[in-house]
Length: 219
Image 1 (tube, rainbow, N blue to C red):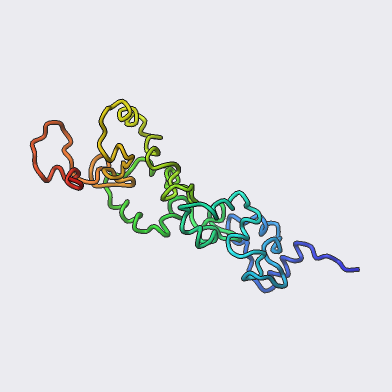
Image 2: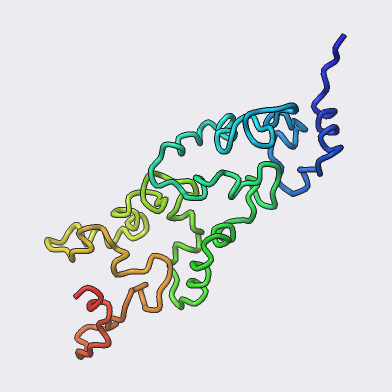
């Protein structure tokens, strides 16, 4: 009678030609279970590398809760390129088979942001919690993968500012439109309070044009 090959035997067979893929600290479940055939057909398929489905569609076969990203607006561009841009399908040095941990992973693509933050003397306190404090790594539907609408997300931390604005009859136009980043750098800046330009620190300061660079960005 025909005898089925066990998962372990299958993995041993694969590793007869292919290097061991479970060589890093965090291993993908099917790889850890010696189940190469969970993703690959051993004979042939319509997808590259004899995968059961092409690209992200393969991942969605198990991670069906992520399939919604395929139809989402403003999803992370790396997700369009493929889940494997950030996640190794076999094993990786960081949790979830990521190529690096935390912000280090983000900076592997966003190098200009890493350089700018290293130079900025004033940094946004939210950065202490990592990029994911404000951005979802996959997407939410909001621009720039913001965790919620830009018009309100700052108030999650700055509730005192929200209360002041709501209690006031007149608001500065950028404030009215929820564009905090017109005046404040969301990551870092060279000015106090993350201001995008110079502004006097005290009340009743004598007028010097160079002290009002923030205002003259628009006016």
